[in-house]
Image (cartoon, rainbow, N blue to C red; front, side):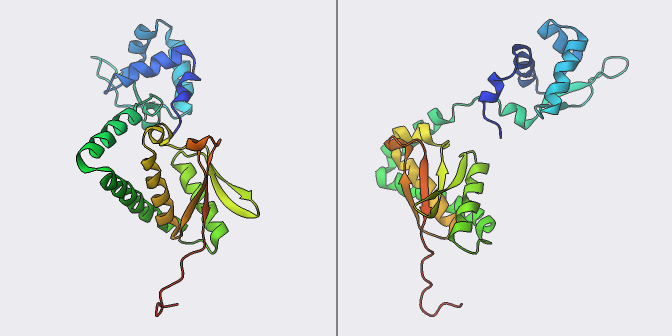
Length: 223
């Protein structure tokens, strides 16, 4: 998924074109886009070609016109993701409601449980790791795919995950308990205890996480 700031990097005409398609569930024809944008057919087709190449637009079902059907163009899911959604505001309201009606500890337990459940679903991607360093690398790849902008760095001879685009940062500034979700997710995904060694909430430029050694197997467990 691309960050919504990518929309601002497009020209004004392409932004307007995408906005038109956002409001047209069935798509729009070249003629309709010409009327909206006030430009020629050739100009619309040039913009569509560029947006098709970037994966923001695709051809939809043709529109009947009384003669030869006209090609329609629709937004792809990636195109829709260009438009910002204020998830943080909604999530903050939900958490505040839960604090008020369930209590702090119930919310903390819920966040940890949610993180652990999603982490277990991601564990199969990291289960192939043969050691802690490889598990760290695979975890960084998983977090990066989720939008955390994560990478592996070497700190005092040990590999750590550094993430400088926490997807919960705005929410965590209001409700630091949200970080329990991240830690539970990473621990469940790797099967190892995870320590946070740096945090953007405390003025650091990025969050950093260190995987500890895997816990010893219980006595009597199979090798």
